[in-house]
Length: 282
Image (cartoon, rainbow, N blue to C red; front, side, top):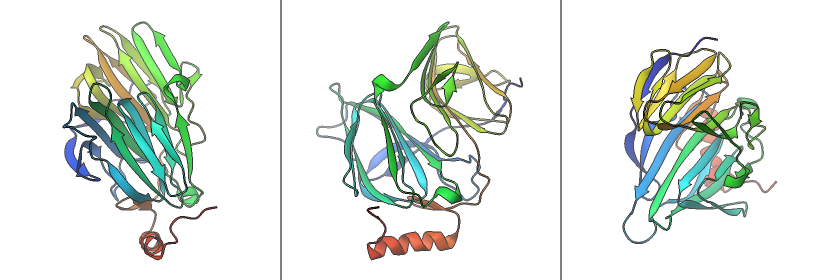
C-alpha cells in the first residue's frame, strides 16, 4: 500500500467566536472546499481561566452540516430549540446533524483544575441530505472503544481500527475519527480509501508523519495527499486526532453557520430564520 505523503502543514490561527471565545482555528468553510467533506476544525483550550465560567456560544443556528464536539477536559453544557438538553463531559463526543435547521447553544464548563480543552469539527452533508431532520449521536467516554498495542493507543470514535468500530454510525461522509497516542518509539499505520480526504491534528508532543517522515510538533494540522495508508511514529511521544472522509465533490456556499450548495439555498435559510420558520418540530 502507498504511504500518503504530506500535502501541507497548517498552523492554527487565533480567532474569536461566540461571546468572545478565543479558539485555535486550522480550517474554516470556503467555497473552494479543498478539505471536502471537512469544513472547519477548531481547538479550544483554556488553562486556569479567570474566575467564573468561560464565555461560550449563545443560541445560534446551523443548517446543512454536522458539528462534532469532543472534550478532553472540562465540559460543555448544551441545549437546543427542540428541547434537547445535555452535557458533554471529559472524553465524551456529541455528533450533531443539523440537517434542515436547529438553534443551539454550547457553554463551556471548567474542570476541577480550572481547564477547558476540546475540539469542534464540522463535516459537510451532501445535497440530498442537507434538509433531513436534525439528530444527535451522544457518546459517553465509557462507550468509546480503545485499542492498545506496542505503545499505540487509539480511541475509535467513528470508523474502525484493527477491527474495532467506533460508536458513531450512519454518517454520509463514511468518516474515520480517532484519537491516537504513540509512546516513545511507537509506530502507527492505518489503511484508508485512496480518494478519501485525510487530516491529522497534532496536539501533544511531536511525531514523524507521511512518506517524508516529516517532524510535526503540536499544535499543527497535517493535510495528506491521496494514498492507501497513513503512517506516523514518534521518538518521544505524540498525540493526534486522525480524520478521514469521503469527499462529496459538490459545490458549496458557506455563510456563517450555514453551508448549502447554492446562493438561493443560503437566501432561503436567512429568510426562514427571519420569518421564524427555520426550526420545524417534525
